[in-house]
Image (tube, rainbow, N blue to C red; front, top):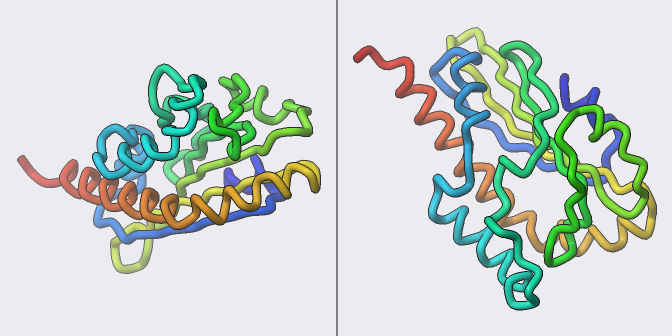
Amino acid sequence: MLIDDLLPRFDFREIHSVCVRAPSRVILDCAARQRAKDDPLVSLAIGLRELPARMLGLSRTRPLDLDDFAFLGRDRDYGLAFGLIGAFWRADYGLLDIHTVEAFRNCDSMDVCRLVMGFTAESTSGGETVLSTETRVFCPTPNVRRKFTPYWYAIRPVSGVIRRRMLARIRRQAENAIQPA
């Protein structure tokens, strides 16, 4: 799996899945086009997460979205991965500017986390495809892990809602894309 190659060691992990009646190629194409701004509830959650940064004058020009992730690769019609490197517990996320898989792999900063969000699409014998999204986070030092842990447990429930809503949107888009006109 692509995510195994990109982040084989990790400290935190979240996985969600959904069955989709569409080919994996179509599903992964839809996954690659997902944006938080397309879902009002997700936009609200991100806005609330970023409220402290705005109040402290550290706000970003636009809310965090998939465009901020580095595209890390696509394994044909089986997998897709995006990555971030940052101090996610900070009000401003502490993101490093990475744009390529090489920059992601070669980052040697020991005061930030590496995060990979991957999608996999596996065909079933029943003609459906199981779409899964997995998020992994690696903390390079015990100090970074101590800083990230409370943040993870605070955002994980909301992250789960965001991922499940994203999977539902991808399913609708993929199934609609293959419907005859």
